Image (cartoon, rainbow over the protein chains, first blue to last red):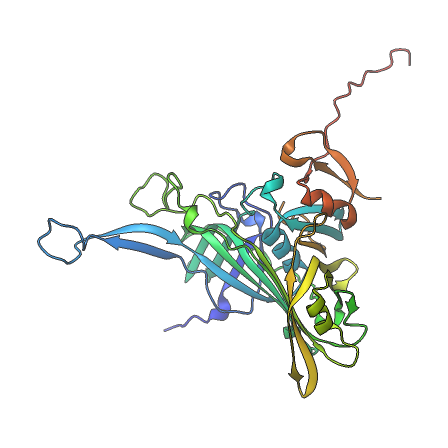
Length: 347
Length: 51
């Protein structure tokens, strides 16, 4: 009997955005990547039953009802220019595309409904396949997905594992669970943004020039309001079939949060604790580059230090700093400038 | 100088062409401007009959 190795799983997802939450993307709109984690985007069906209802003569359930569908997953990857651009565009929500081949630039900020922006992030489809075709093991497509969070981790060391991104996504619940008809595109060529390319300035200190940076994590969480996606009229798994289970008709972000934490060597003249006490504010600019056409620059417009802990890393005195990203009147909370060779991301 | 076209907040007003530098784009994005297609010119072109 044959077995199926998880390494066979192929994933692809929308490079551009869906026209609306319920309209699945075809193969031409998808791009294919590898990933590091084995978790699959399993559809989950919530059911209820009639156990508590009167008139049956007993307390046992006699029938079940499909209530709703859920789907979501996490992508863990080495950080490349392409996935970085995608995560920024879909995770923050408001890109401006400029440039031309081979240098497309995506300048991205978060959506601000108070200034006329939508409260819904751009949607994409997510496809998983294992041996599609005659010997199919898995062939399914989650429709109407949105990025719940992204997290970038930069560490010390030469390997690819020292520059990673994790993207969590959630879905409307709409799933094509067999025979998607999608032929997987060729795998996307990726340009790694290695840790060794980092330039970093936080609150007035260049931590790379001083050779003090040890590690860094930064990210964004949309806290999408999952429950409010089910509203009267939000729709069903099978259109027009009220017994097929409800799906979400919208995925609105909730109270969004940015995060930035870093560990640096601590020595005479280190200013982190002083800045914590003074609640000094400044920008944090994180830049990673493959080449001039493939890079990511994340700028937190205004941060203060919320926690400073002095400890050790490999017996070298270090300081772990938690930063609080704040809103700047002119420039907002965060901007990302992502460059890559790929046109049409989130368009 | 590379440029893109931006639509004012709430879609009210005329689009304008701006530089693509973050220093120009980001304050506009935060203020509610969003990228749009270049406006199509509506000027009528007539052939010069004296040519």
